[in-house]
Amino acid sequence: MSGIAAEHWGVIDNFASALQGVETVLTTRIGTRVMRREFGGGVAELLGRALTPPTFAAFQQLIASAIDLWEPRFLVRKITVTGTPDEVRSGTAGFSFEVDYRPRGHLGDFTLERVVNFSLHFRSGGLVVAA
Image (cartoon, rainbow, N blue to C red):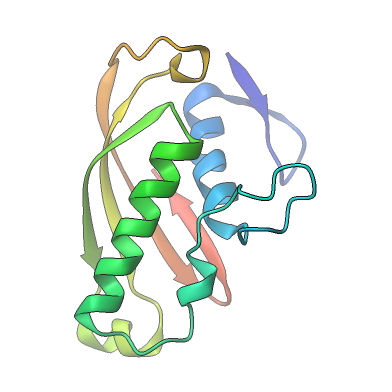
């Protein structure tokens, strides 16, 4: 299966489509989609708060829940915070993911193909997801 890239409207493979799905979920505020108000990650609501251990734990929980709810091709195994203390203070820290990749999960087939790693970084007012 393949998808369409949001940036350049070209064809992308299933894995890239799943990564794009994660980015879409996490950058969408809950309540902003007209026909699906419950869609979104809830992450944007935490941006701008003091970066304390409880805030990072909340980020991790929201991200894992959003991926589990809205991107069935991934099952989150582990999320770790990446970045130095200076990067955390400047708002450029990120998260590293270890997930089960189930390429037909959106079709109800949750057969594991492989375990993959990818990262998520907050940079220049946006979110970057990279494999």
